[in-house]
Image 1 (tube, rainbow, N blue to C red):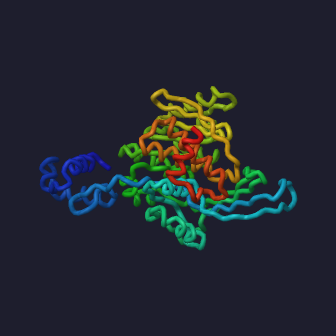
Image 2: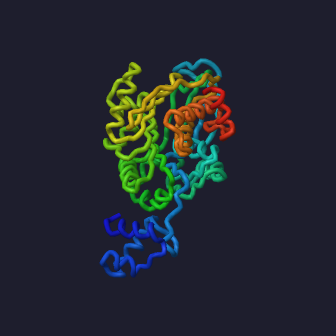
Length: 364
């Protein structure tokens, strides 16, 4: 958006019924020039409707991966170099998709922008998600297979190895995001995972900052965190695990103090709030306002760890959108993760605000 377009948008915000002639007079340019700017703003989703109606700031837009999760549960101890008996389950997966479903089950308005193949798996994913989430922004790519994530879990439910086939995300370019920018401008918050190429992540961060759209980033892996740009100015939340935070901050995490040092280094990149997860040791958080703390998780019987990190991120975002303080938001996230750990599903099908409230009172 150039300077004149921004000025026009500012006038429209003040008076959605302002005429093109009035805009031309106010900006000292011709009416035809105004018409050109209006056309560009409409095309890119900044305005819509006959009265230059601004898009409603409502849903949370989750941007990133949607794929098939296949979980292989070992019947006994896993031995290398030989066949191991397992039980196989299939669920919807992908960080952005998982967060979107969690938020929807917490009764938030959510939309999803993901790349999905025009195949059986892709249609299966969409059919399961459509009753909960607006999938209109998502991209159907006929020439690609829907992404898959295969995790091997030991008999205690801990992941031993995971295999990811996410090539469909790597073919996306900036133009695809630009063509869907209207969904970003109508979002109350954007939640971005790191599955898309670097150029897309950088553009989303830049544009969300430009338009003051709250942006939360949830990392995916140590390999994909390298896709983030060095500068993260304007990012509202960054949520990462121990290894990802270590790589992003350049700090080796061996002591409690190291975690807070890592938070400081990430905050220095421009992030407003940092959360570093530590598995059974809970999490640490820090903010630009100087707030910091550590929270231990409640004890639960672990059935399956898959999806717990995504549930935690969704819980934090949900609580933040409800106006909660960072510490309480992290506690809500911890509860969501704990509930998810008790289910074989990547997203607990019974997660809802009432259950969340009950668990919060029980554990905290």
